[in-house]
Image: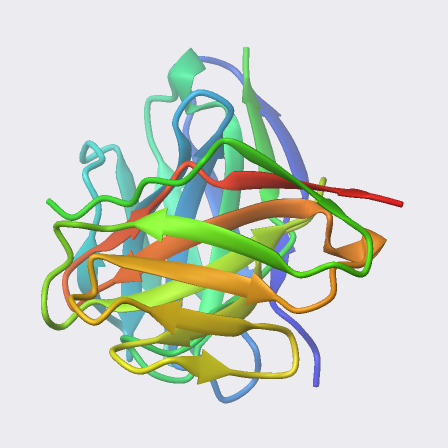
Length: 113
Length: 108
């Protein structure tokens, strides 16, 4: 079974631009979560989608948004990029919404200049 | 808000058991305790999880305190491939809380 895939793997953007990252979960998984990882803040939860509905949301500004499609693929969008948004963005999928193990993708490394 | 506390780093000799502690004194009754590990340049990898009872799987064991305010991940025989950052995570209905992780060094 194919694992979680994320595209693109690397991205360089300029302050003020917006960016869209994509995540394809493991086949059959309906829950997709997004995380931000930085050296200073560590791993932080962004949001979770289950059956196309956002169920959980972390403490991030409204510039961070996401969506999930009927095939469970998910995208996250960051508008008006700031230097501090430079991070590794990780996507994880699981069978159910809460409590079950998650399978992480390799991440998208976003650099904002 | 619930939070987890882990030692920044630990060392273990190869083929010896390793006990990685995690404190989560503000855990709520419905929070699951998850452990993941992360190798350099990779996404985190699931290790084990539990709610109230101790759990075993092929990778590790999870010992959960009776009051659920702490837990310990047990690697029975550390190998060089176990060198990674180990995260203790509380996963609840409305939130996910990460610890800062413990960097495990395995000495040959």
